[in-house]
Image (cartoon, rainbow, N blue to C red; front, side, top):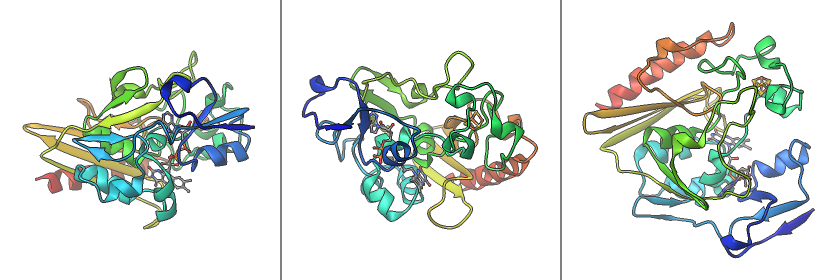
Length: 271
Ligand SMILES: Cc1cc2nc3c(=O)[nH]c(=O)nc-3n(C[C@H](O)[C@H](O)[C@H](O)COP(=O)(O)OP(=O)(O)OC[C@H]3O[C@@H](n4cnc5c(N)ncnc54)[C@H](O)[C@@H]3O)c2cc1C
Ligand code: SF4
């Protein structure tokens, strides 16, 4: 396998992108991802925070102490472990793959192009309670939920789009969970200011744990946006619906109660 280190966007031409490598390297090791060229983005993707714009190459550790809204800072602080936060970038975090154990063990499930959802039929305690009719995986990014509540926009090497438009629910015709095209790099994330924002997370243990449920809430004027991690195959914006709209599986009903309780607390903290 070759490692390419482009120094300008014009040099991007295929291959698998890598930033911190905390997701790409395990996927390569486990044979889930295969490529002959790995493209190190670090010289071309901006890093750091300026005027409400976050370089996609900024690490989660850097965001923990940056001038960003509270919800984002807290989502970064609660994610993964200190070592992973020092390596992992915000761009890579938004694009991390599902933690569904069947997918990680390479079961030929729907997200791998097959015709069954092994989790729906099997062990799914950690899985989705919304939008779970095709694939019941639960999106693991705390950071994406915070940025979704904050109504962030992405600037890529090809377009500008609301973060919500980065994600799509997988279906029979297209199994992808993002709309990013091959060769398209996320460059910056634009985060509008919020008057108040909060991120709360329920975890199996107090550290180094993916969200069972994470809730982000951001208030600007009379408007409050709410987004969840760990409840749907993509980061989930509560858009004109309530937690009552959840469609839990036999062993995920507990998540509905957790989501409701976290949301109540988040709204109380927002004031
Ligand atoms: C044990 C463990 C625990 C974790 N716990 C949590 C947690 O609790 N909460 C949470 O939110 N996350 C968690 N994570 C995820 C972690 O935060 C991400 O792995 C990390 O942020 C990914 O960033 P990276 O730079 O290492 O990505 P990489 O591994 O370099 O890349 C990840 C993906 O993004 C693509 N990519 C990277 N940068 C760009 C870009 N700029 N443009 C286009 N494509 C790009 C890559 O091609 C790849 O598909 C955990 C990870 C591990 C391994
Ligand atoms: S939940 Fe999604 S990723 Fe997991 S087995 Fe089902 S189809 Fe595959």
